[in-house]
Image 1 (cartoon, rainbow, N blue to C red):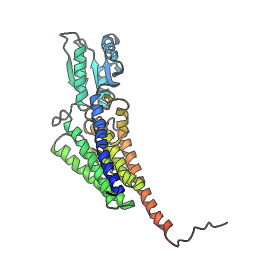
Image 2 (spheres, rainbow, N blue to C red):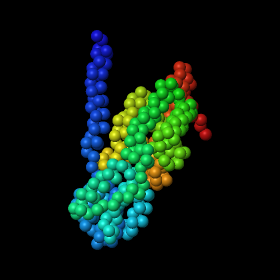
Image 3 (cartoon, rainbow, N blue to C red):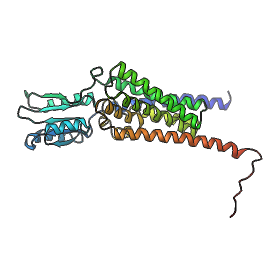
Length: 330
């Protein structure tokens, strides 16, 4: 067997297990370390009434970031604005827990268990779901499961565009067109058919389309600049790291540090946050996530155009008999 063939065989034998181990680590490690970390929760009511509960919450060092509100109405507004995931309201008839299962069913259940466990035995706990998850998807399963296919669709658009040899404006048009149709198709399925999304139809379609465009343009852009290795780099960022670090199945604040923060700077995490905001919170809290998606899309498309110009300039510069450039004198 030639030496080159031997090296290729050894590379395959070593590379595949390494990729599998990396993928298992990327997906399993955050899931195995799930716990609240600076999870934003509110306390509403007189300081004398909320002090015992605040002491119990802060006793779990680093678990909760407590926001104080004077009234229950202010706490509700904070939940609707996605400032906090829930709030404990002190009242004459006992505490009331305000949650938002639309923001995270996992966090809503976690807060219910945490607050109920800290109350004296026999103390009733009233729970009000301020922003409830869609009735057709109460556990957020569709949103969580749909993120990976969305990432794969974006990756496919970038890879196919690259393999077909599309460059410059044609590549941009192909990526934008595929993303638009993917956004429309995804919204038709998740909103119109499954009922898992309940906000503005066109806003949801826009978020889905921007997500696919951001992923596709990033992979195509990296491939235009780096060649075939760029496809692998893009796939690692958007699929092997972006999906498990997104926090969409729970919340970014439940992931180990700095994974939760990093995930929100990657496309899948920003997409999950933006989609939840436009679907259930009238867009509240979507601003930074949309900026992240737009930044990835613009950077990727810019890289596609730069790569096309570079590829066009190289043959001209290396053409035989090409006359050297002359600099005109004044």
